[in-house]
Image (cartoon, rainbow, N blue to C red):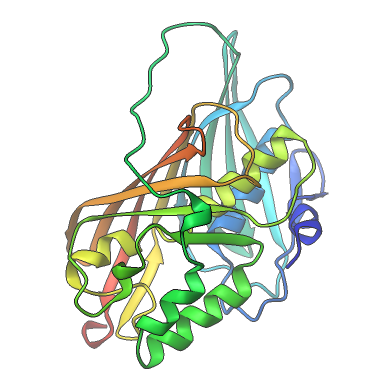
Length: 284
């Protein structure tokens, strides 16, 4: 998929009052990528709001989407206040497959601080994720290659390739540089959608690192259950972003992962949280 095709992916078709239709790319995936539904739902919500950018969204993935079918996004106007606007979006393919609440905020001045990014090598000093393939064995290598081949134009580079080595240290944190690998138009709404789109990548891998596993392990069933994102400052999704991730908990076949997205100059642009299903296939 090219950047132009990504822009087309976010260009939803009107389908009645506050309803929009989105399509999926023909990439051979058996389920719709969660980041795609998040981004398209945000686009649908933004279509009903004038003059206020989103500051947060909270979503649940209810069912796996069928990439062969169009997705209907129904927007409910919950509130239009003096400073905040709230929208609820339900994505349907016959049944509801996804639900999201998004909040929009009038721009204001106020207190300003941000946690600094951790030390990390610059993106140009980091190897392509394809280099990690050489460290994986068996089905995991082929699953990762298939993912890398079909998620373009998302590009990511691990700051530490050793994370994929069999004897890797088992920390509960990891860092990646990520971006949309081709130039996008200057529309800020498009960059917000693209940021949400790529924010769903690599997160759950942080929860598997303490167990010496990756999301490409064929012994696991891995799925995003929910997703929350807070927009802090404007950013371009086609410029490198440092994705700082950690997993404070895993239990009951689920794991919580948190993420911070920094621009290359160290500006904190967004925060992310996600809970995912991490189920051993022998336990299904």
